[in-house]
Image 1 (cartoon, rainbow, N blue to C red):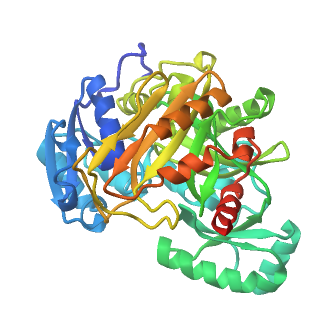
Image 2: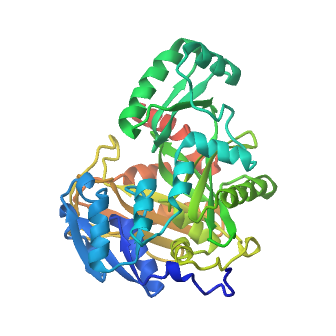
Image 3: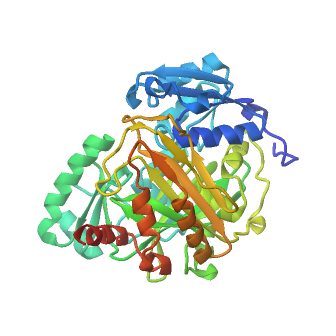
Length: 463
């Protein structure tokens, strides 16, 4: 039966304790959202994270395995056992690790627990790039030119597909992500070598050699649309982000909204994303990723989880995305409609990594001094403190610096000041690189695409 109140929840979704199946800054973020909703939290850790500060602020703190992620944060059996031992009724996967693992989501639900995320079937559909593209085309979401089927084995047929699309093309792993399993092919001369190399890379990295081919857009921007959906047929999109500042397909700086895109251009795309969610019965938060070139949008993939860059959308939309995600998982009806969504001001996020600012090699060690900026329109999401030991076992992200201001220009000025006031000693960080980037004229004018940062770095090294 449908709910009669937006504040009621289906009995099958009720839980009062959440196990956070993640680490670092996102574990802190989820813990805060749970506390504000009156929920208890269970933090987990590996041997390397025993001294994590968020362990002391959780209601329970359990070590589930050795430092290796494969034996701890990716160990599904250990996480499910910890959930039962702690008496938690739900698992929040955060991002990375098991957040987009359909088998894990299914195991959580079969154990009688709530997975704070989409259903296993939605993750499976959108996790495979070919089935995702097919679903988006059916919903009227614009896609990059190319077939919605896997590449065959026959070389002649592959050549024909490439010619129909038109060079340059890009070869991608169907089960890929994170910038891996893809190659640009400028001409027919390198096509078959690229296919062979990418197939083997896809097989090793993702367990499947399945590939697909699309048109390679030469000067696009990377634009994202954030959605949230409940179990009762309601879905909204919360504005858009520009994530074009990338190095080796990894985002470095994100902003919301994407500058220079008129509402009448973006609105039909946002509504198409909502329609796609309704068609596949999507639940929870998700992000549609597009390439944008010459006024046209092209769908590339959907991330069926919370994004690292969600804070810029929170600050511009005024919606606490993590709390909304948890409430939807509890069975609540969304407490906002599309007409309620208004995006105000401009926001930037800088990913602060423990890495050398020139070579980008990871930097482990002890943080000997930490000073973080504060003031109106400044937010820092982090788990580190003076004395914290940065581990070599995991992703190098140690903090996210986010600012919000009435205009893009004011937000850039605020970020420059915030970066100037950020001090982390004892390890190397990418802060000097970020400070230099925010002084770049083309970036300040919004004259960048997804290839700009790589070119900027080459010129910087040559200088």
